[in-house]
Picture 1 (cartoon, rainbow, N blue to C red):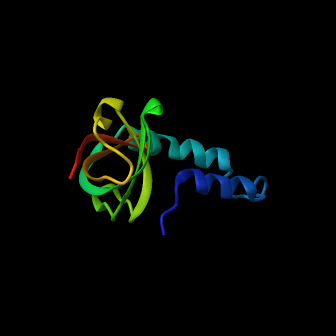
Picture 2: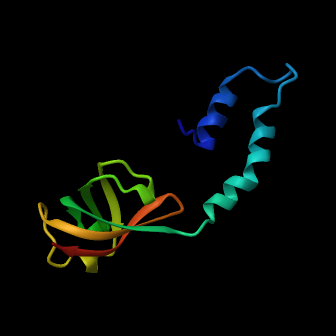
Length: 117
C-alpha cells in the first residue's frame, strides 16, 4: 500500500503526540520537506495509450478518456480527466476510440498528442 506524505501528516496531526517524547508533526513535516520538494521537481513522465472518449470540455481544455492500465504513469484501468490543448480536440468526439500520449508533471495529467483511431 502506498501512502502520500499528506496522508501521513494528517494522521500524525490527529494523534496526541506533543509532550509524550514522540516527534511532533511539525518536525516530521520539516524533515520531509526536502524529499517532497525534490519529487515535485522530477522530470515529467510520458506514456502512449489508447482509450475511448467519454466527455469533452473544449472551453476548459479537458477531456475524459476511459482507458486500460497505463503502468508507466502508475494508472489503473479507469476513466480520467486530462488537461488538453483545445487545438488537439479538432475532429474528436465523444465515443471516439483514440490513441494518445499522456504526461504526468507535478501531479497533473495532460494529453500531449491525440488522434482518432
